[in-house]
Length: 390
Image: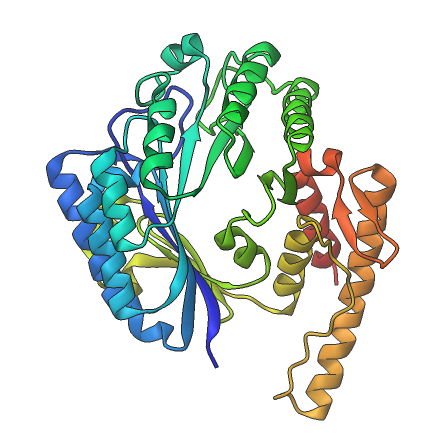
């Protein structure tokens, strides 16, 4: 029996570094591009034998700027995935990009190789901010890309907006959100910039101001007919990301590339995040993988709860983790443990409801409120703490 799987290909190549970026990136020199592409191909060959029985329903090229591998590089990696893994014919294939990094040649190639979804990372659509924050591309090029996309496809696309940028104000955020919605994208992501760990300016985030920024975007999106199917992910009817939906539904996740994370077959692990090390050992899973951990019943229940409360359908605690292969004694023990965890989770979720961070519907399902969505990291930590003592 095949299991639904999503694949994320992380490409840390960047031609310039935004002033606010703290992501893993490397320069996009020709040598780095070639070596990284070859490392990805070697990793795919190395992990393929362990993924038999997995049906890949969605592939996402993330970064960095994946297109700095070139359209041909993306095609080569995608072809290798299809040759070595069981990729569904109708799989969703997303490429993240930024203004200035996609052209007519790319769009025509995408139509041929099966890339059927684009996401544009748009830090700001305010010219002064764009320059000050050293954002990639040329200000306003997203409009040119949109005209090309409408002519050549794909029809499924989205924009990724970011709030909490250094020096960003409610006024500049309102302008960015307004300009983005004027493009009428089927999908919009609204992400909060996290202060980088290396920041040493001593300044604390203004929680109320940040909440106001998110609140403005959420209100505008709802007015425009978007539904929040997962926290911070908004889509028009029928336009939700399959990659996101499957991830939150519990599909196995395969991460490829430096620093990529995976959750497969009851194990979680991540790749080394030192790029030279990754380039040297991507063909050897024993060297490239670290932090391997078994996803036990507690971790699985916690993950299900965190994802469930983040989805439109919500989360109802109480499902047993005992499998049909378990013997009667073990099944009874597992069911008892599941029952205790369910009670603990429900008590914690009720506390989130009292705090205003969650809502419980008539069917007993819990979902984060707007305030809870803004404080989602704290809500997830609370769920984890309630299970830690069991």
